[in-house]
Length: 285
Image (cartoon, rainbow, N blue to C red; front, side, top):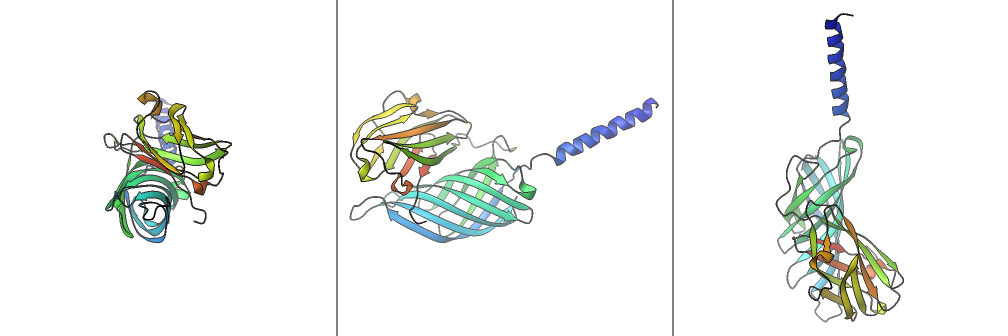
């Protein structure tokens, strides 16, 4: 075989290898928009006062998606809202279905009486979206009919996240003996710091006696059935911090054996960097 023929074979082999690498690469998510309608909405007061202002809510919606995704979406979210201040926070799950496959998302957001905003992460995908990864931010309007714009950013996108963008997510609650435990994850690029914790719990748990995040961050005796912690922290600020990509367990300690019903607990954690995480459940969603 002469050198010229050998060179042609090598070039063909390299091109085939590159083609295979490209075809096997994970799809890179792009910007998209969802527009839809609320189909289910539940509210429950979080206190027994005559005119409560704090409520937990459960919401379901559906509609259309366009941009990177061209199809339909469904989503379900849970959250807490204070009608006195107009502030709220939520977390939820969304599925977008197109002719090319399905993609599942988790989102964590905040709201006022006009707008919603927050962050999202891709959880899974099928068919043409299998292996899809990414995270980003979203913003839209808060109403029964709504439009939300999603912009990927960070490591799985060519777009940098906005300066100071805060990514936080709360997992499922676990209850054991005299403790309620909740995992908090920072999936952003910057360290985040707990600024306040609002916590509602069943009366039968008795007083809240301490809160830890690896180390004790609050110690005292707070009577049922709810409290907001934003001062009187134990330890330095760093004891309330979660590093980039880190998950820490927030533990609430009580005098009595705790209820194992998740619907008895509602948690709102606000971070100094501007994001929030929520834990909300309903008995009959």
